[in-house]
Image 1: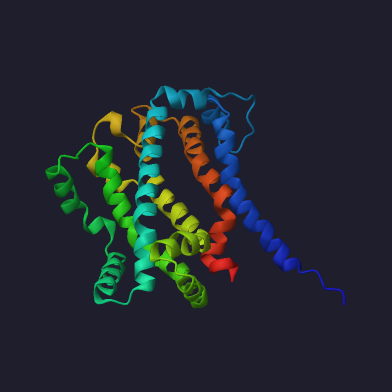
Image 2: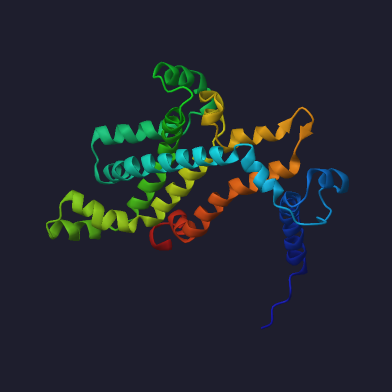
Length: 272
């Protein structure tokens, strides 16, 4: 039987494609224009010529240093999450003791605490610890707020592992450490990729912690460095959008390399 074409769905898809593509076109075309051309022709006009001055100008304003600071924060946050969450999730899944259950409930309580509600005591704590205006003072609280969601995601992934596999490993005389490294971690790659992408996005797009817990130019991150394009004369829109495009590249690369495992992690082990 031949299916009738769904013209309504096709028209809706075109409208949705237009709504998504128009902002991308404006952003990419603006990066290839000079500031005067952008102000004269408007954001929708095609660029008369192609120039990379906006990208080089972004690095002249210190964007390269902000990029490296953000990259350092992101790598450290992801490292802390990968170091703490897998063994914690394994203990939550395999142990039924009151201590483990209490720790898991404490982590679930962290899901209900918004970041804005603790920013004042967090500022006082970081200042008393001597970590104010230091990237370590941004890394630690950012990682702490990533732990509850990451533990919830990974523990759900580990619960989908068949109990028979654990019993087979136990009958072979495998220790809990061997079960963790040879069974649990390989079958939890989807969940691990999910928490890596989640924590990386949280760290890369972080704004409130860097804004409150840093001050000097040497500790600025990308989200704060975008303010440099706002001057007394106005906003350098092409330079700002060029910096935004540069800041998007690492996130796109993480998604491109981890998208398959990310989808499997959201659907369950093995994509089931």
